[in-house]
Image (tube, rainbow, N blue to C red; front, side, top):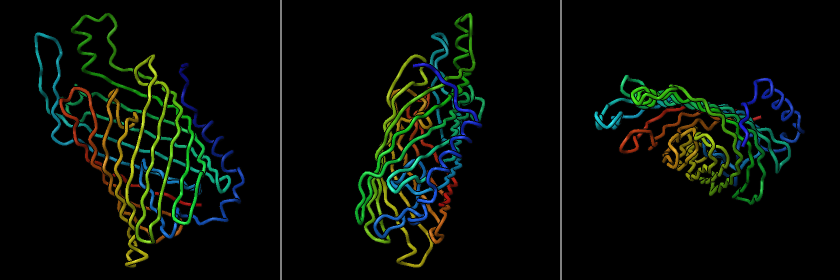
Length: 316
């Protein structure tokens, strides 16, 4: 598969203008927030809902490993060396979805994920790894009943990975490699599709589930592969029943997507909890807390990562 450069900011702006102009008046006929059955759903990151509503979404998150221990081997003479050192996780993304018809929406997403060693030991072992991605897709409503909604997506994703591998560079020098490299940049192009489902039991409680499968290039040059995500959770809105404008959302995900997993052939497990303000009719604002078990290089056991993120969504 031929490598392609990520789209320029000018291209992104053109796409935004085109999508915005597509029958924008159709959105006025439906409620702004995502309502399925009698339940008003609150979005949570990386667990999209089956809605073709128009919105702008932003997420900014920060996290860190706790008590991370690395096991590395530089050469046979030195044997295995154990090093302590934490790794910081940074995630940011922006997405925009435009309703075209009641059954159809188009969306774009721009994001950045970084994994950074924060001490000399972890910088040596983990280096600095970042992934930027741009995706464009279509969202189709398949089924909708009094209490449920079911939809599908199709998308194209163009990503670029930047990997600074200090340990690999040191090994190459020790092993007399004629061309040691400390940094590698890898462009990746993939196509994907997904399914989204939600059920509103009543005003107080709802549930949702999703799955996504992507196929294309990987961050191992010359190789193609699959990446997946699956998740489900509960959505509680305390305002209709208790007059408290707070929502509590709990979701569990398993994923092998590269923004979480840069180790080939492994997956991450994520438990997310979100507290959100639910009184407003045209926006959602909340704080997300996640406990993640994420594979990293040169560790015996996958570390636990604790993250916080501020998430906002504005409906139009």
